Image (cartoon, rainbow, N blue to C red; front, side, top):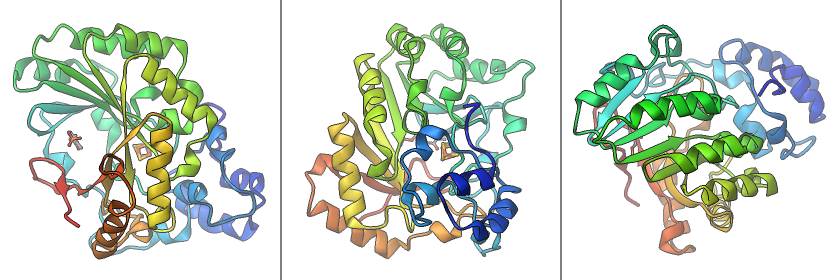
Length: 319
Ligand SMILES: *Cc1c(COP(=O)(O)O)cnc(C)c1O
Ligand code: SF4
C-alpha cells in the first residue's frame, strides 16, 4: 500500500499518456485523492487514455462538474447509524465500517465524500458498534466493510473478530473488499490463517468491474481465499466507458467463474457528486441485462440492483 501511486504526474508518465491530462487530474485529485497500487497499474495498457482500468482511477475534469441529483451522501447513510461505524439498514445483517482506507481510490465510489473521520474514531474504537450488535439479537450476519477492511492488519482483524465471536447470535461473516483484486499480495498467510480460524461460514464479496482486472496473481489470490474456506462472490458497478457493453459484462462473468468467483450484484451507479460521467441510463442497463441473459448460464448473470435510501434491501431492477 505504501508503494501505491498517488501523484497524477507519475501515473501519466508511467503509462506514457498525454501530459495535457495533468492539469485536470490535479484539480480533481484535490477533491478526492488519486491512489492506485502498482499491481493494478501493471494491468493497464500503455498510451491508452480509454483503458477501462485507468478510467476507474484517473481523476479527470468532469468530476468537478456540479450536476443536479448528484450529492455527497446519495444513500442517506448519515441517517442509518445506530452507533459510530455501524450501518444497520437491512434486516438480519449489519455493516461495520472498519476503516476509511482503501488500497485504491475508485473515482465512482459512493463513499468518496463519506465522513469517515467521524465514523472510525480512534478512542474507544468499535466499542459502541460491538455493544449495539450484541444488544440486537436480530443481527445474524456482520459485514466487514469500509473503506476496505483488508486495509487493516491481520492482528487488528483478528482482534475485531475475537470480540464478535463472543456474540452468540452471529451466524455468518461477510467481507466486502476490493483489495484481492487491486493488491493480490495482501492475501498473505496471516490473512488466510485468520480466515481458517473464524468460527462462522465466511463469504467474501470482491469487487471487479472488468475482466482485465483478473490477471494470474489475482486468480491465485482468489484461490488462496477459497482454499481457506471462503465462498467468493463479486460485485461490480455498471460504469460508462468501463463495462457498459454486453461483451465486457459477459467476459467479466466467465473470467470470474474461471477464477472461482460467482457474480452477485451489478450496481447501477450511486449518484455521488463527481461521478456523473460514469452514469449508464437505466434503459440501457436493462437492455444490457437482456443481452447477457441470452448469452450466459443463469448462474453467471449478476442481479442488476440500485440502492435506494430507506429501502429494506437493494432494489432489483427488472429487465
Ligand atoms: C448492501 C448493504 C448490505 C448487504 O446487502 P445484501 O443484499 O445482503 O448483499 C447490508 N447493509 C448495508 C448498509 C448495505 O449497504
Ligand atoms: S475500493 Fe470500494 S470503498 Fe474503496 S474507493 Fe473503491 S469503491 Fe470505494
